Image (cartoon, rainbow, N blue to C red; front, side, top):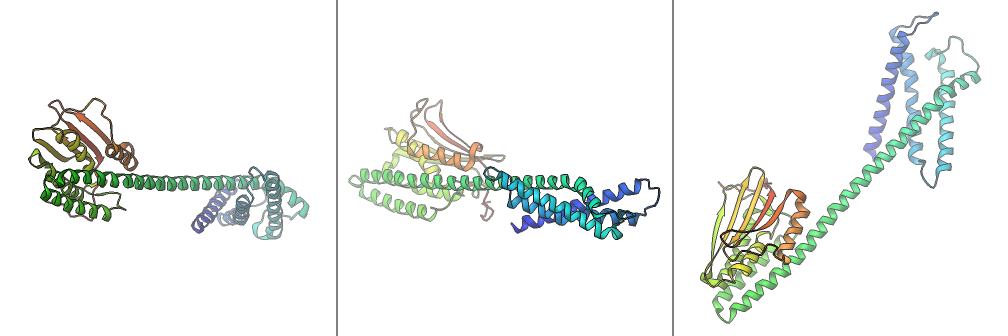
Length: 357
């Protein structure tokens, strides 16, 4: 607010200084029968007359801010503005009358009543123009403040929605992981033990990144490896993982827990449903300023309109909140069988991370 007032005072002073210079130029080009103005005389007369408007304009702007003409107070505000305009008229008349020897507007000073009448014609409408400018400034500032508040509320809403989606995702993942462990504990206790260790590591990482909106791709892939170790302990030789990660993408920023639901969906609906061994492929590459991430399986091709569960719906909602229309998420049925879940994001990097050579 203080900065706004200083800018407003500066703008008023600059405006009336320029007005004074213009007036001085007009005085120099005017023809006088009884006097010849020098440049110094014209500048003195033009600038001093214009500078007298600086306190008047600031006062009228204050009146416009303090008593704006708006619904619920129209009559009161118009009355106050009218009084302020007449006060400026009277102030200008008195100042011109008293300072005429310095300003030199009148060769012979007339009666004060004549100066006052002239001030009404010269300054009343100009006072209302100042009041109009004050209202324009006031409404523009209000609009800017409303826009800023709306943007803040929108950002808070997006953060709240992301927190809600994250809170939804953690129990969903934990439930599925515990189900996998329960399926394995009687058949292969050693594998179930390894799965519990991996689950503990996953939960620890999840808690550490609970307030994080984005993480590096290196962190996200490390978390995915922990999850795939759990699933490989359960599935054994029935699942093989192939990694195809382009170089120098370790510091690329992605939403946390982005790839794990995609891998979980591929394992449960494709690889685990097969009798023969299946392959899960994890890919990451960039194309200009775009980052591509993909999880591909070699199971049966998905239906044309597959039903999205909690994990995939969660991903779609988070991407929309974080990137708007700059992202894309799609499930692609491969001609050779299987499905590829592909995510496209704007490529951004963590400036504090060390890029792998």
